[in-house]
Image 1 (spheres, chains in turn brown, green):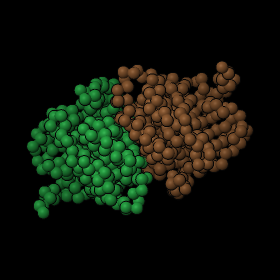
Image 2: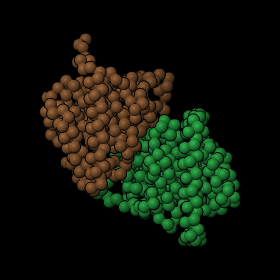
Image 3: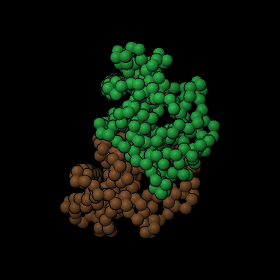
Length: 272
Length: 272
């Protein structure tokens, strides 16, 4: 088995990068708040999803912050073209995951920040500003929510009785790909106590124990950029399932994560 | 057409009762916060739903507040036996709607307060303490959210295109009654952009425009005690569908509410 390249980065370096990621999350909180104060402009993209002035201005502020601190690092995000995507360190950002919720004044949208080192996820931050909830993790350093260490407990066979709480996107996300709607129905049949918040808030809940597991479906890279590290560093299970590519040819992500034992069961339901 | 008895209550009286309901909501916020500070006890009821010390202590505090202010009024709630349920004025309360979410540290639980006058809903308050969001309405006085008047706009046929946002309970709530799971699947097929928060927060969102419509299914009286007035006073549509009785013989409530036009369409999908 190949050595994990991430181990070549000293712990102090990983901690320093995580501190930097948190500063970037602060920058985004401030910039998005400022954009709201200035009066949002809201537009529909060709795929009918929304983009606001806060999304683009947030991503610009993030990019500027990365370049100021680490000029050799790359950046990928939802709203702007990739910058230096072949760099050793590449930041991935979604300034506002859940733009429709954000534009409707709902508090459950979040900021996602991930850092990849030689294509391996090194750290992740998910920030839910309106709830003042922030999940952070870096390889080998554990997972915290608002500064407190969290641990995801396994779930026994007997405890999987239909009352387990499973977060998922809405059926509309599954239905984007052929036959996908059927998988949503299968998920709800096997685990009927589902929750649909429709944003990365469900990822934080999978780490905090608010949900027993979460499914993400047909998701672009930035939607899941922070999650793997946050879940695995808390002792949780993260499984990547087969997924199609987007119309632009970018790989999409079908993932299940949360309590070991339950995640494998859900993955079996969703196996295509 | 019979005169609406509620018109016999002067506007000043209705306003006074609404102010009182808001004071009761403040009492509940304080009592629940106190119970959390003292350390919650959590128990499972025979139907596997949870009850915490905050539920029972909240309901006791509410009952005491009603008796102190209006000794002749009745009270019905989830955790204690009815008190004077044949009174002219009957308060209906659910101190914590979403106890499982509350116990898991999630912020989306809410307090529901309704007042019935001669069996007609007179006023309603839904309070979401962790988000500091409160919806209030009384017959003839309009609906406010955090003090600001809200209005629910109708939805045209053409706008109902599959992207409309519909709140619903989880499949597990439908499946409690025979054949109910099928209706959940039908709802998701017709309106795939569903949200499942699982609590009365979806009722507030139907009034604020955060959701286009909300479904409540197999719900006891206290789950919907505030909603009809909140929706109708904002110009929204509230439809009551056929519903079974609970094991105790109490009527359950299957309701759809939100934007006129969309609500009728959803009701047709769910008609049994």
